[in-house]
Image 1 (tube, rainbow, N blue to C red):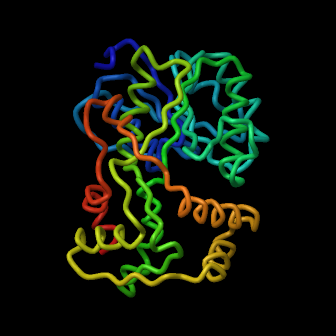
Image 2: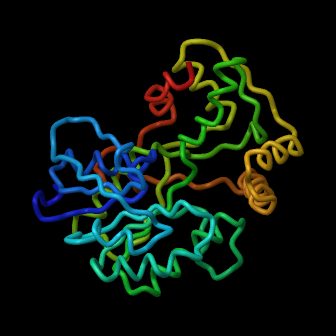
Length: 292
């Protein structure tokens, strides 16, 4: 399926929710994989069938630190962890010195029509896509919809008070399981036929925030209440978590726009992997212990 033994893949963000699953997808398919970590000693991967994971030190804020991990690499999975592209050009230059292939994790909200992006986060992703294109790297861009894993931000209030307090209770989104993003990424990294492609990825159906709450309640086996959070409280909470005001305002405005123009659902995950995208209920069952 992947061309076992033909590739060495470098995965950035390898200890995060998506990156860790990209590593596991590749290793279980027998593809040689390196995991980039600022602190390799803290990056542990369970022993299981498949190839071993080679963990190597590297820091995206220090482009030359990536050189040892890039030697002999055929492709790179790039998850950019910053809200600025300032450091991206030298990183892309170093990557280009060692490989021509890159798979970039972007956002479904990026607009191709040349108009101003809807919010600061999508503006950042759009700029990253432009920089990668200008770099001359052979690229594949993944544009997933909202991550189901963002619901883990509700875990503390669920554990402590059996409640989810959020704005936009009736906003329906086709949230995607991180394992489905990873499954597509692994194929784009190690299979032919994906160069120059941009894939919009969604979950199999849209659920409102209230319905997501119900799915988590079902997964953990106890009832949960949903309370609509006023917009001003939601904004204050985002600022308290350290988000810049323009990012908080942009995210709230983007969600309000989604209420008016819902995100479309597609079957791209199934087309690319041969398996239907996982539902939010499956995601909630996979993560139930984190809410208990």
